[in-house]
Image 1 (spheres, chains in turn red, green):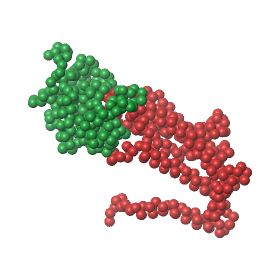
Image 2 (tube, helix red, strand yellow):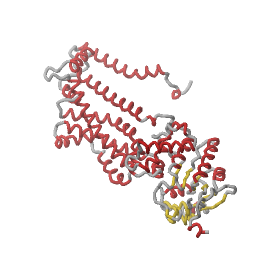
Image 3 (tube, chains in turn brown, purple):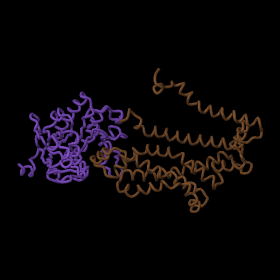
Image 4 (cartoon, helix red, strand yellow):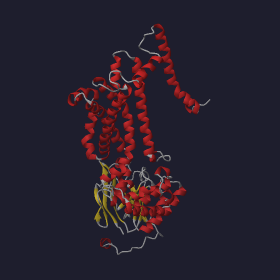
Length: 273
Length: 257
């Protein structure tokens, strides 16, 4: 009998095992929903599939009688726009400051402690300040996403940059490179895929801050809709919305990972150094 | 032709003395092997030659001029690891040195300048037998090929001095002999001065025209901190042909004799 640690599932078993937890969750839901609905057919907590399907059709495929919008899609567009702008700005700031802090001693001496302290401020505690300064419009929500994830991206990238072997930086200098040339040809190309890793890791937090901002002050967006529906205990809408947000977040992560694989082939060739 | 003069060189970190009172002078076109036990400061010496670290006392002169305090293109280097850039192909790795020199802002060449740099780099790759692998990334190359690439990358800048920090230490014996031949040939062709740190005595004598050993003279535990290593052996290796000097020896060298 081989040790458990040495036994590996084959491809089919692997797939089955991967699906198992999902199936269990769905079955648990169905059983619980069935049980509650058999006692009270009007129960709203765990709606049956048909109720959920009707809600999805209403939100996604029929225009809202009041505004004429297809709510799921208009909510998705507003949320993704805010998230996209916020993450893009955070990536840019994080990339520039992360690399400079990781590479240049004078920069590190100036900003390291500062970003360390900044990253300890709970972003949600700053949200009221953002609403006061930037108003209740789009800007405050985007800024919350930026403020929420930028310190992490900076610190992560600064660490990755500092991990570039000292030998490479010396070698570049013996090839005659200036500081700028080292940044441009040695550091940035190697840090872009790491930056994508950092952005992927902070996407979860970005969604958190986005939904929090939308829940508090907004008139559209996925987070706004969920918190609006909470007032009516409309689980048949909330559950598909949560599932939809999860799918969106997962797809974004997957897209970034694929982009990284295609754009930075050098990381995946051969067996690495 | 380059003459390196090391004058009363000391290096200490805090109160730990690593090197003390190292002095020697090299003939132009020498191949100096630096040997010694682990921790004897031979790599520290190499880093001071590079300009990566500053001596605590004393100085290093190249053709009578004090060494620049930071790495520069007149001193090429090949480390045991991480000598080439993983995100560039072999060809791009070699071209990089030419692009740095010719394009200060973009650090890239275009058009005819690019084609010239590319041709020169391909020639250089051919010199180390890597013309077939020009478009491979370092992670796709074997250890020996990576080190040959690192040598080609350094030599494209035509350095006066080439510094090798245990460059062949991680290679299999067969591969190592192969790279030795390439190294000797390039050294004879280019007429540069080479400093090579190595653990391997046979390699030191096989390649070097001169073998310099660093070691501590005082080894009692209470003396270890205060006394560093210094030159304990300095041997000329017979039967090695130092490349002929195309120019007259520098006046400083003449004065020294």
